[in-house]
Length: 54
Image (cartoon, rainbow, N blue to C red; front, side, top):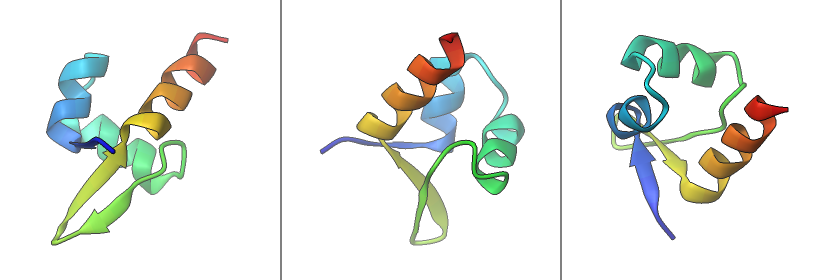
């Protein structure tokens, strides 16, 4: 399974890192905290992208 950091997600979505962190804080994007940083699974990211387009 592939996981992405907030920095990688910001590049993929074209959003700032702070915006990604806000989405995680507000539970709009599900993430796991590992070793002091947030990781988002590929599946979760795909779900977020698909739901965003609707």
